[in-house]
View 1 (cartoon, rainbow, N blue to C red):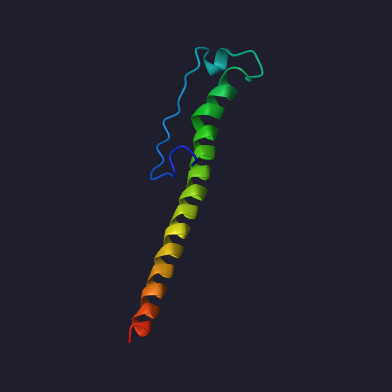
View 2 (cartoon, helix red, strand yellow; view 1 turned 135 degrees about the vertical axis):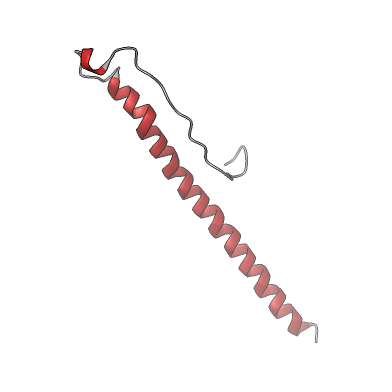
Length: 81
């Protein structure tokens, strides 16, 4: 937010592959298939979740400013009379 001032769209393009086939992996999967799932699925979900929160804040901010502008213009018409 500080660098770019907001967000207009969220495009998630994370994706890695694992050189060890799942059925041949004899480890607990921390550095192989679990890592692949974390990047390919959970990181995309986390990023999307944060983007939705940020976009909701932006939409609320725009809605609030639009209503304040409308109210100001509505009351200004009576002051000009």
